[in-house]
Length: 88
Image 1 (cartoon, rainbow, N blue to C red):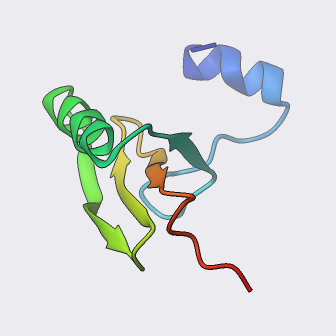
Image 2: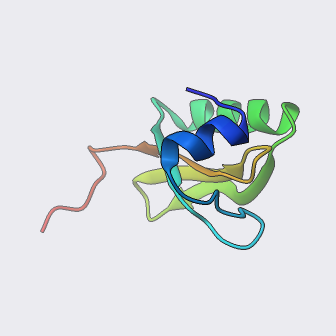
């Protein structure tokens, strides 16, 4: 749910974090493909968000990116190719 800050503060029972000074939470979203990662980041930027982690591969089996929304909350979008995941 989205609340005005005053209502959220009442529900949370403490101060609201200043997202310009630190990260309070990182939301992660699973994507079905690298293209879906790119699309989600594009939509976030078009809505006024900012990219803090450019889309790209980490190792050979994960493709992801990170963006911050208008309130400074950080989001991670990640595609994992489980067929390419290393097994120990």
